[in-house]
Length: 201
Image 1 (cartoon, rainbow, N blue to C red):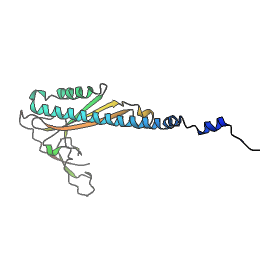
Image 2 (image 1 turned 120 degrees about the horizontal axis):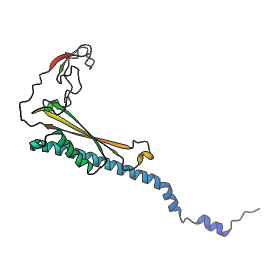
Image 3 (image 1 turned 135 degrees about the vertical axis):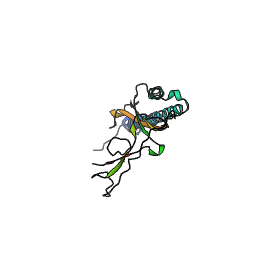
Image 4 (image 1 turned 90 degrees about the horizontal axis):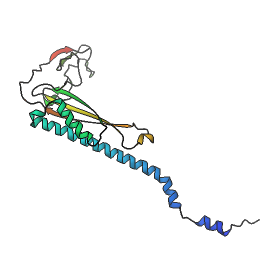
């Protein structure tokens, strides 16, 4: 028995109209997800740049204008700049003060008698910040006093612009950090920070 194909079916099998639409239907979800990811990354970089710029501007103003040195004023300026582009952003600020710029983010010096790169077993260290504990960052919390170098950090948390967390395993919020170092106005003599020798535990 010979199987014959009707002319109508033959024309249907040769017809490629609509194939582009079908191919696009397969590619579109991946393309949309890729575009959302790029836009999301771009906005994250924009938020990071805005935060860093606001921090730098606050530091510059505090150095040039003695009336803009309060923590509340600096924080308010940075908050305003960030919330101009991310109205629902949550901001957190941290400050550590140091005697000099060279001390920023440096650990307290200690004598590593057992050569294990850890301050332990009663090894002596210079307690620069006066908390009787060896610290990987010798800074003291807060704005400090006259002539002190201050590490001014900010963290911004905000909801993603695009709901990527619904499609791939990423958090629903983004967190960006920025920091700058400023010098307090020389309105007084700098407080002496001669370290006290303590022992590690």
